[in-house]
Image (cartoon, rainbow, N blue to C red; front, side, top):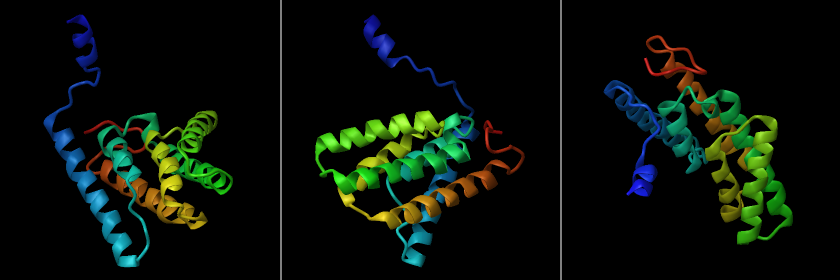
Length: 166
């Protein structure tokens, strides 16, 4: 029973209803906006790891992993590393494991850790998107998400980066 209690114990502090409602609504708007912009411009702007990025940007904006440099830099670094390795390695399970491990090490070494960016490494190996992937969706998408987060977190009063829900 102690093991079950240990496994189910939650460390995340309780947040007020207005914070988690705001987070959910804003994440919905953010992903919707990125999807709409991508469809309107015929650019691939929406990728699965951006959903996890929204969890950090809007659900845990005070996290070091949710800061603009980490969001933009982490996605760029992970995608660039994956594109380089995918050019010389086959799309096999061991190569994907290698690139995810390398991505984690590179993000930690550069202090640009952004956990959702680890998904970019896997995505590159599964889809073979080519070097323009760094521009769209990675650079354009992360700038749009960080820009939206900066606007949202300053309404009505909170600073971003590093803010708590107000």
